[in-house]
Image (cartoon, rainbow, N blue to C red; front, side, top):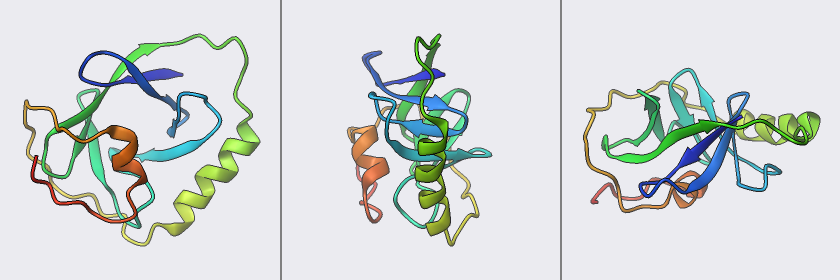
Length: 123
């Protein structure tokens, strides 16, 4: 498992077997398929490259942190079911081209993944 961190280096989520988990490690909030990032929307919400999660506008929304050794393994069957629920809603799996920017977005990573539809990329 690998931590996902915000601009200040605070752990905001985890990456585990292509699933993006909340900090309790009990809820799947997104998926990483190839280099496409999926949340609640039916299409990719961003991309992942160079250990960085980016919004569609290219701004950084989170980065990979450190690998973590688990004291207790997450309940894989439960998480797999949640991941399947996200995956089964995807109807557009074509990843868009994103121009890499060095600036961070103002939007929260969790909020971004949980958005039901695209928010304007103004920040």
